[in-house]
Length: 167
Image 1 (cartoon, rainbow, N blue to C red):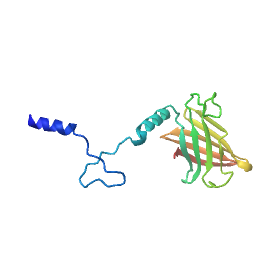
Image 2 (cartoon, helix red, strand yellow):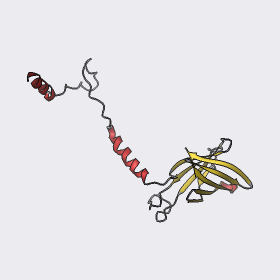
Image 3 (spheres, one colour):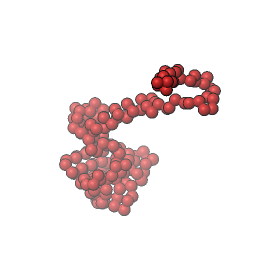
Image 4 (cartoon, rainbow, N blue to C red):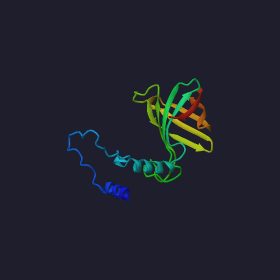
């Protein structure tokens, strides 16, 4: 019984006084455990994850590599999964939108731009875009499989085997 009273008294005892601002606590003084949710990180992450769950399968960053592994382009897609998206270029016509970056000319003024057309039907994806003033039209046709897209890219008369994976 005495042990129970002692435990109860310890549980109700006020916490030790904190050291004044700028001073170190005395050695052996217990520190309160750090708050695992300082700044509301868990709530922000949960809200982000809930929002991402509503997005389509192309959402996010992708890499387009040649068959030899050379990085050709980086793509960033916004895929609203058919839902209305007030952030889209056409909020009332939800479709996949994207941008491209030529990995071989990242610092060039015309080394990036918008993807002019994106058609995704079933396991087939077709992208169309042009590079700046050179007006070099590119068509990328890919089929999905194993978390990546495999196909070809046509640039002018050249046809190149490519693979697109998440970045």
